[in-house]
Length: 377
Ligand SMILES: [Zn+2]
Image 1 (tube, rainbow, N blue to C red):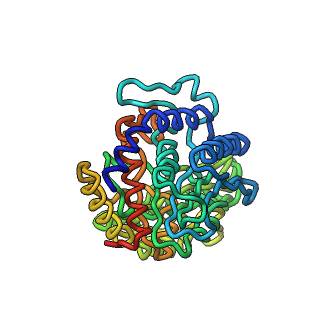
Image 2: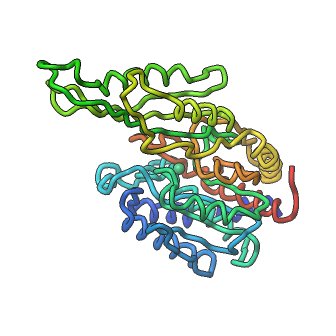
Image 3: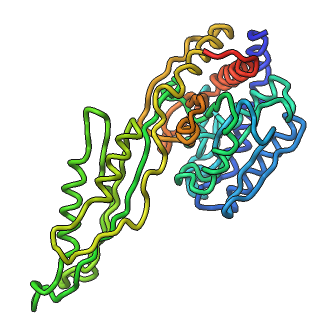
């Protein structure tokens, strides 16, 4: 039975690649909501033609989300259709297939993954009441502020969440760092830099202290990084700046570490007693997806690979976060990296393997079937 899935997937290779082309050719940067709507509509057309029933596109906070299947599926196939590429990138990096390499904006991250999710459901011949759900969002690349609640609700009663983000060198992702970010405003007092600088409170100098302090919060042996990333201060060269804003990026393997940094960020105070400080943006964004969340599913995926007669997949922990972090934090078994094989997410050399598409689609199908059959590792 499982080997039949692989044969069926291979026989549909041309359709699968055509599906990828269709989605890549509809550009969908997160910032352009209208473009994202068009891309979801394109995905919906694909779903209706492959699965025989329509998807539902709903708006949340002015942003579209696509769903197919039950509201609370047993297996949730999760992905996003937004990309980091601005409209017009397609002119510079057009859709192309050169041997095994498919290129085009968002092909690897993660339009291939979306096609594989739809293709896996099609291979299994499942209908919309079968317990498998598809959920594709359009704000993953900008932190999933509006779709987070939708994802968490959809996953609430799931046996497993399979995330179709790209693989890492073909491997699955069983743990992901949590991400936090902070935008910290420091308020001082303006004064003439030549006439009476001593009457000012230099917000930039205070901000420099924050930058110096923040880097010491990192804990390299635990993998916790704290990276000051942006700085803005001052208006003219001859004025003591009365305001400075510092951006800080934080990554950590555990929720405890994210909390530790959050406490430090919120507890930080400037040296000058009259300077003010406020966190004006950010906080803990995606919680860490700890190793335990995906270990069992990764094992089951290896079992499926064996039955399919394909090479062992392998898995590892990675620094970047995804929407799988949200579902893992709810205690739902979550496995990520089931999407494209290739490289270059968010980079000009982004590409995805055409040969891997049927294999990966078959893997997702076999894993979904195994979970539905009550197998767990
Ligand atoms: Zn992605």
